[in-house]
Image 1 (cartoon, rainbow, N blue to C red):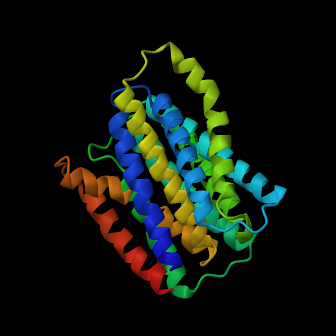
Image 2: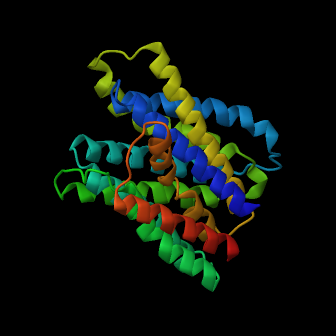
Image 3: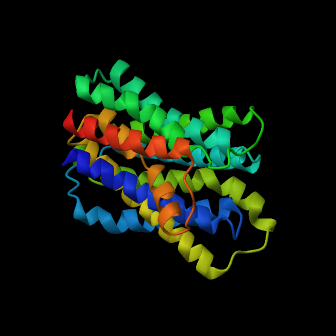
Length: 277
C-alpha cells in the first residue's frame, strides 16, 4: 500500500506540474505558484478530518513548516532558473537532486537499509529522472543555472525529508502547516510581481486547482512514509516528471526525444524494482 500511495503522489504531482506549466504561459509563474499554494491549503484543511490526529505536537507542526519552506524555496529557485531560459539545465538537475539528497539522508541520517532490489531501482531511477526531464529540443541557458537547479533540488529534498519526520499521530496537520509556510515564502516575490497585469479569474482558479493536486500529492506521500521506507517513498514520488511527458504526447501531440524514451523505459524498470524490493 505504501508503494501505491507513493505512486499516487507522483501522479498527482505530475498532473499539477503539467497544468501549472500550461497556466504559466498565460501569466507570471509566481502568480501560479502563490495561487497554487492557497488552493493546496484549502484542500489540506478539507482533508484533515479524514485522518485521525490523536496528538499534534509542536515538533510535528515544526516539521510541517520546515517542509513548506522547502517547497517555497524550491519553487522560487526553479522559477529563477527557468527565467534564465535554462530549462535543459535546471529541471533535470533539480529533479535528480530532489531524489538523490533524500536517499543519501535516509541512509546516513535515518539509518534506513533498502533491499538489494530497491537499491537497483534507485540506481535506475536517478538517470531515468535526468533523461525524462531533458527538454526535447535540448533547451539553452547558462551553465550557472545548474546552481539554481541544485538549490531547487535541495528545497525539494527538504520538503520530503522534513514532512516524513512528522509523527503518525499528527494526522495531516503537517501538510496544512507546510502550505502556510510555503505561502509565506512566496509572498515577497509575489508582491514584486504584483505590478504585472492581474491574471484572469479562470487562470487563478486553475492555478488553485493545480495547487490542490500538489497538496494531495503531499498527503499521499506523507501516508506512504508511514507504511514504507522514506527512501523508497521519496524515489517513487519523485518519478512525477514522467507524467507531464506522457501527457504531452497524448494531449499536446508532442514528440519524444530518444533520451526521453529511454528515461521513460528506465522509470518503468525503477518502479518494478522498487515495488518488488
